[in-house]
Length: 547
Image (cartoon, rainbow, N blue to C red):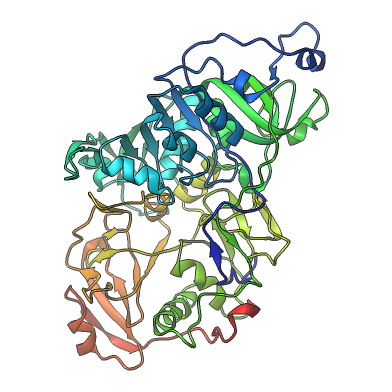
């Protein structure tokens, strides 16, 4: 546990320095390609070798129309060499399942460049402009799935479970249907196809405290693939795999859910070289292993000792954001396990008061997220949910994405802080999609807000055009239905009453009045009897380079 800062330094949104690989594979064929002599010599006598001499050979029987499950998160843990082999082969009409879609130049971006993908099932697609263009112009079909649900769909397939119920997505387009999956090709961006509704049922949350009412859960079906492409740090000739730090992410679940699983490993060792206690994916799940050179890719190199673009002392906009962060930090208590979203929520960790010790959880598979590294100490296998380089702290642990979301869905995290484009007076929120215009995907947000943890939205009070972001009802597709507990802006703090019964103004920022808050808020609200001036963390950011 730690309250260490995650800093505000510069992020470079390019493929840089140290990282890992991803995964993708297809076809229903169970044939195997010829193995090389070196591969046979490393295998156990009497068993067919799983080792292939090249990525081209390992992927040779992947056919057009195949379904591929591809590991990785951002550019970390991505089987880049396998993807390059598939790009070279020229097969097309591929149906790809992956939590992220890489960038325009790396990861799955390679297959978007050559237009080999016809359908994507994924969660967060915000960093790939090439993908977004192809989707909005009607060239590909897209199914957006909450990240935790996607991880569980693949884990369930590998475990022989055809379907399961989850609270994630209840009350949203995930449940009710209507999410655009295919747009027209005439430039009008008309939705030609949308997602179907899902079956729902009422259950009591398994770990809920006594007296918690039942909730609505939706039915989700498992996802398998013709091929599963995964990336591991180390593998042996039996197919046993070991992952490294946050490069583990979705790879373990994906490895179990392919009819043929192909593993790209940085280090290939003889059977018996890996301590059995250290194996993350047992070889029973892996059909083929190929060694690939470490790529060392980092999507967002973020350093604590680099000049920061965030400076509240010179920027009015940054001063507003700092006020939001300083107030949000006051919501945290020692012992809390906390998940911080991208942007303003991430900055909140810089303002946690002295003496308050929390543990930061990242949905890509890390508990105990430390501050950004200094130059030269970055690690491509160590990133947060925003794909920024981070460090470890004493007590840090790493795990797979499906286990990470089990922590989240099981309400083991006490607090979630995230941003939003809109929040309604009843506690609804929207932060992932503007149909026909903006396609980012919900990532893990739907899982987080449906978890039963305290949900705090941090955002500016109005958008860039001066329009209120707190509304009577959301106009954009919902991320969560009646899920928000507290709203913190640079102007005010609101509590959301239970059961969607409206807002209560509890704090007003210095220089604001109840009347000025009403004038810029698009929803009615009550005023608490003890409404007071906004309480801020005593910490301020005087020198960004020191964090």
